[in-house]
Image 1 (cartoon, protein in one colour):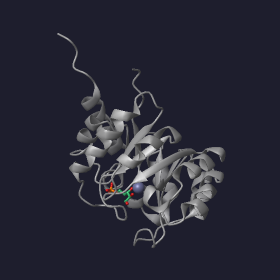
Image 2 (cartoon, protein in one colour):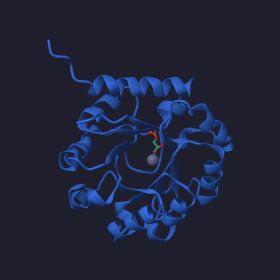
Image 3 (cartoon, rainbow, N blue to C red):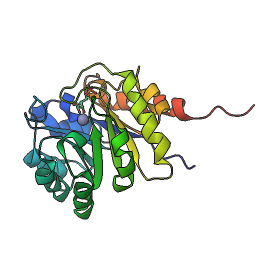
Image 4 (cartoon, rainbow, N blue to C red):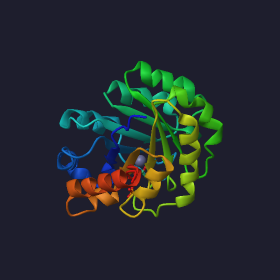
Length: 227
Ligand code: DX5
Ligand code: ZN
């Protein structure tokens, strides 16, 4: 199986919201995607940014925008992010009663389609839908806030998804508490895209923090040479 490049997606949630373009610039040589957490104060208690800011970011950085919509009624709002040029638009399974229909709308609008599974939601009911998606985002915390502690038990969902993903062109992304002490376990479970907020923007040197995380994934996923 050809190995695909690991995706490291720093989360702007831990950046300075008054300097988002600078935050994008700080990681532009190292990050694969820029993770944008959209929270609406309904689906989650927190409130962050929305479509106007995503449009401005799109103009401010060449990095692919990985929009993680923690919002109610994604059927209504998510296609606008695809139309604005987001690379990947991920909505929550808990907020949508027609995930396949919305995935098709997102793909038709030119974006990759992502399905997010929050802490308390089992992944099994969604495994049959994976061919309709480009990204499966497994929360490794409860969605809503940065800086929470990683929950290792949630990697069982990553393992279950990786087992059925087979030859699908599916990214399995983990989000929440991903840092130098947790990323290897996530990689070993089968994740190949890693969101990191605090671990990147809380670091003195965000670009160096990304290099370190990528190195840890490479070490965890490179087979030992035969002797
Ligand atoms: C939280 C967000 C995450 C957040 C992760 O609901 O989805 O993307 O930025 O932050 P850390 O990496 O600090 O856990
Ligand atoms: Zn996120």
